[in-house]
Length: 560
Image 1 (cartoon, rainbow, N blue to C red):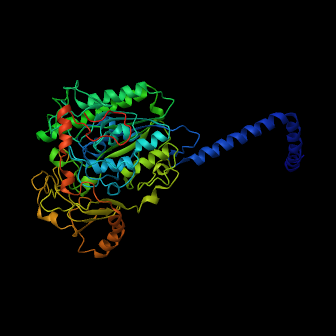
Image 2: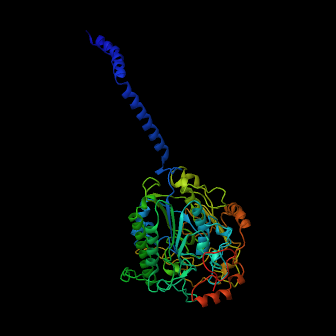
Image 3: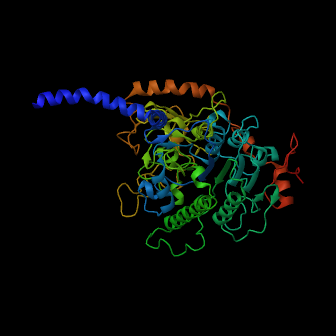
């Protein structure tokens, strides 16, 4: 036979052989087809779920535990992962395991920023957009605004808060236990001694465990005290139920006080102010590591979503660095509103690991995003913020946010001639390219505290408090300041006169917010005047204490 004949005969016999084998192994073949179909379905589902490094969270997955850690006054260059010279190994490692939110924004001072974080709204839609709540003044987050804890509690979460509140304490109704939290361990005002836990304004204790005044922690540095409580909450929690822990650190707000065990650190830093600040930052980093270790120890880490950020930019006059950004806390310069932030999940694949998110996000986005992660629709809840969970998990294209515009603030209290004009910037708006501020962005206005060994632009402008008050530039709130953030990230050149068309188009976008802004609750000087009753109750208790009775039944007893 020739090869062509053999080949044709062989081809003819193959179907008969296949048919014979198929009948013999029919049951096995059918079973294999079923298995293959199942695997194919699973594979296709996985492919649809794994997009841009993220795995979709479906309704069948249980809600994650949520740990929200808010640092106080931490500058954008105070952390290692942004290129700073202060050692923050815990935070640096967590960033590599999650998403670096490299363009995250906040309001430029504590109360407005916390109001935005807790409500999912711009501060100018809460009434707390001006300055901060001063001690013994009857200003608080309006009761009709639901907090993050309210929403998560409704979603089945156990809700706990440790640390700084600073959203008002006129009555117990305005404090954490009546704003959605199951427990509270911390302080109600904005500033106090790290060791004695007494306020600088009045010298009285401001530390509560629920309703009770805590007087036995004199000498215990607040980082240890708060971390001990946070770890205790984690160890006592039934991990089959979702947990929300809001850890609002005192660190690294003034006063500058070296933590125990850090007295010999950073001796290479010549400037005493920066040296103490470096110690405080590294101690904070170490304490956060203890919380992460505890989450792993109790078996909760793999089910935990952790969000970390600073409440506002760092105050340069306290040794914080926002380099190379201009300005800091209290100002509408980038140094006041561009903050370090990241999000991480304990399980690989839920979020894109080691990824930079280069688009604008804001503290008002945190609440709707966490609800999205918990499987709760944030729609129809009155948020200004955006649910970023679909972007973090890859279900929506990040580039959709490329043109996003964010409002910096609308503060009608600016300026009040002769009354603390340092609360600067009347209104502002920006995207990744352009930024418009009406009214001087404020003081300090320097590009300050370059990392050790980098002297470029060091000390440019005002870095201390010398020009905070009564600067003539602060008196005209109509003057536009326009900056090209792509080409001039340090905001050295005001282009308003050169680009009037951009000023006009951005002001058109800003005007609806100017029109919708509510009147600041502390607009008038009389609203920032200390209450005689508050002082009386505080003196009687030798502690910061709510002074007005509740209008409903509260968990804590009324003033006494």
